[in-house]
Amino acid sequence: MAGFPRLAASYDFAILGGGHAGLQAALKASLVRHTAVVVDRGPKYGRSFYAPKMVNIPGFPEGISGHKLLDAQIAALRPHAARVTYVTPALATGARRTEGGFEVSFDWLRQPRTVTCRALVLALGVVDRMPEIDGQIDAVFPWANQALVDFCLVCDGWDLEGKRVGVLGHDDVAAQLALDIGYYAPASVELVTHGRTLLEGVAAPRRAELERSLDEADVTRVSTPIVGYDGLREHQFHVRFADGTTRVYDRGFSGLGWYSMHDAIPRSLGSGFDPEGYVRVDDDGRVLDPAGAPIPGLYAIGDLRSGWNLIPEAWASAERAVLHAYAQYL
Image 1 (tube, helix red, strand yellow):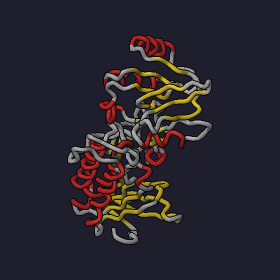
Image 2 (spheres, helix red, strand yellow):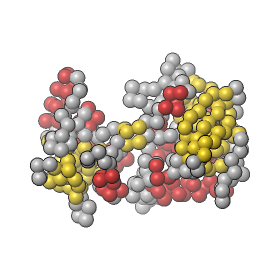
Image 3 (cartoon, helix red, strand yellow):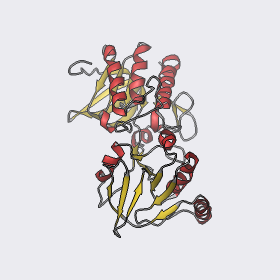
Image 4 (spheres, one colour):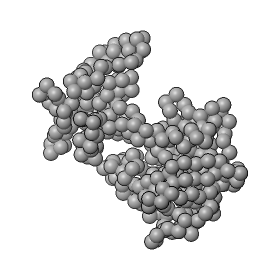
């Protein structure tokens, strides 16, 4: 991997996405003596890149940041350069079935490229929706980068005990998140709907159930539009509203769902999807078609697939997919 990578015409594996799952899949492919190309848009596009401290990663008792963990995984590939080609910055643009497997298209250094592969591993991940102010999303970045605004309850809920939490969102997902946060014993929880009508578009029976549950859990609601944030120096999340008021939270939590689930490529290859929009897979990561049958040679791993969105889970899904391809397909 030192220097400029040389792209071969064909590989045993093509791995689209260079996050934690994709990098682990590439490493495993080399360990079982197969070639692989990793098409990576770049580490900064990974969901964990801006996470300052993750405490559920084995081997790091003091925690590790997302970008350092990605750096370590990239470094782990370097001794395997004879079998693994790591291509970045590169954007996957398409894939199609061929007689012997798949042809993958991507843009690399502003040039369109194609490679063929026998097995295709989709590790494209998903993208969180960020709160917008005047149509822009960057206002919240400093707070997200300091872990003052979180996006994953099962990753970060453990740290909410005794804290004042503001949940950003207005729909069913946000309301359920506000209720689920109560399990972690926060001091208080508020729903901040940013001017949107709470539970807008939710069916009446479900809306009534959620409103009753929110009342019982003492989850207050703030419907005034947001105009900005503050409190970074105090290591807090202050939300400024259009009426001139400010609410002070120890932690913000996004209940806005996904901006993109990167479904275009799996959809073009015939993937089925679960009700939440994740790619359907079996226990070995094989992509299932709408009828539930596995698509030969096609795998989905990490956050793209149905399952838990956790880094150890992403690693496990990568291991299972590559081992299945090694033992049963290739």
